[in-house]
Image: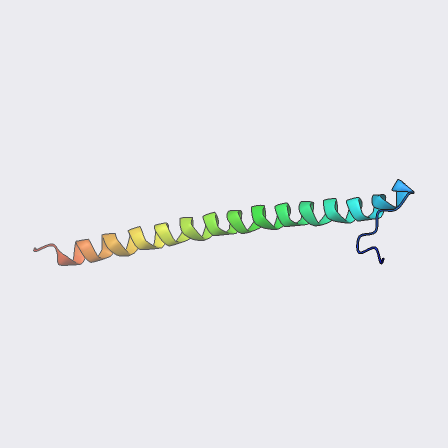
Length: 64
């Protein structure tokens, strides 16, 4: 019967796989943090622009 799963006797063969897994996990975490920070910066910029536009619209609608 053919074995479908390969479990090496020499456990040192797991080291490259574990290192690559850790590398991808760290890269995913760094990417996620970068996206969150960029999103927060964009939200802050949007809020500033929206509040400025809202103030201009409010001032122009006031009767003199």
